[in-house]
Amino acid sequence: MYEEDGAPGGIVKKIAYVNRRAPHGTIYALEGLEVVLIGAAFDQDVSMIFVDDGVYDLKRGQDTGVSGIKNFSPAYRALEMYDVEKLYAESESLQKRGLVVEDLIVPVEVLSSAEVAELLAGQDIVLNF
Amino acid sequence: MTIEVGGKVFETDEEGYLANLSDWSEEVATSMAGIDGCELGDNHWEVINFLRSYYEEYQIAPAVRVLTKAIGKKLGKDKGNSKYLYELFPYGPAKQACKYAGLPKPTGCV
Amino acid sequence: MLHIVNKSPFEKNSLETAVRLSQPDSAILLIEDAVYAASGDTSAVTMLKDVLRDRQVFALGPDLQARGVDVEKVPDGIEIIDYEGFVDLVVAHESTQSWL
Image 1 (cartoon, rainbow over the protein chains, first blue to last red):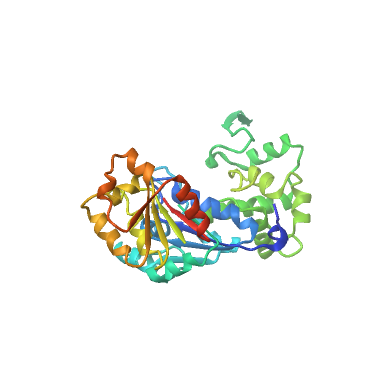
Image 2: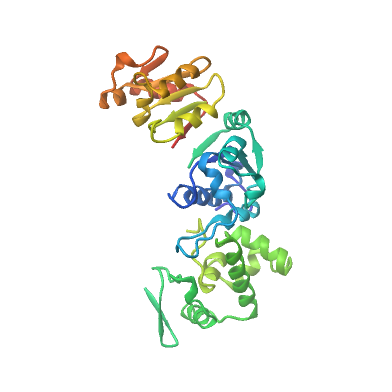
């Protein structure tokens, strides 16, 4: 691990993680989050983008106590401590699902579809979950 | 694997991390540390309790880098550095302290 | 950017989202079940025809064949490529994104 010095040779790539799945029905959202947390050790320029059902990952008030599955949504609030600070949600995806930023567990920047497309086009690596 | 504490048997994974968070108690922590030949003092407890409240809030065990930073903020600069934490937990602060705190192994910790 | 889609447009919205979040001049490659989007008279074909105005669309031939999708019915403008063409396409683009 490169704990203090960052990436070897100081190469910083722009990496975007696109989250498109709701949190509990499949493993995608949790896997995506874990990849981001692990990848944070490499000090890259990371963006997380929530589109389609991925916006549900950030929904406030998830309570899995009765169902017995793990509620990992609080971990999105820890991202800042991992220096992952660029969080985006697509406005169309939010609107379609009747969500507003106040419904989300972390502050995000809301982007139009065209703005998301532009953001994606400017990345070195895009990983979908 | 299991660990026996005070006549009770608790399930652990193959590396000795508690399978169920709710099985944790100070006795379990002391016993786990004892197996590693480590006697827990106030400074250890400070980190263990910090980890437990961190987990309570974020539902993840922090990476060592994040732990160091957060400890520094909460307990002061003289404690928020790897040297101090490695002296307390020579097997790796995140790894070893998380085990005694009853948490799963930190994400990304090998 | 090359956008690779592998899900049927009738089961998942991956293609729809890839289209929405791709820029003009980008390329979209349909593989696996996404090739159903390129067959016959469907709502997906209507969408792709619109996409073709400012983007390139490709479909992987072996996947069309495997699914019995009639190559004759693939709309004009959608280019059918083989595995070598797939490799060329990836090489030709600076970055690639696989929409799951």
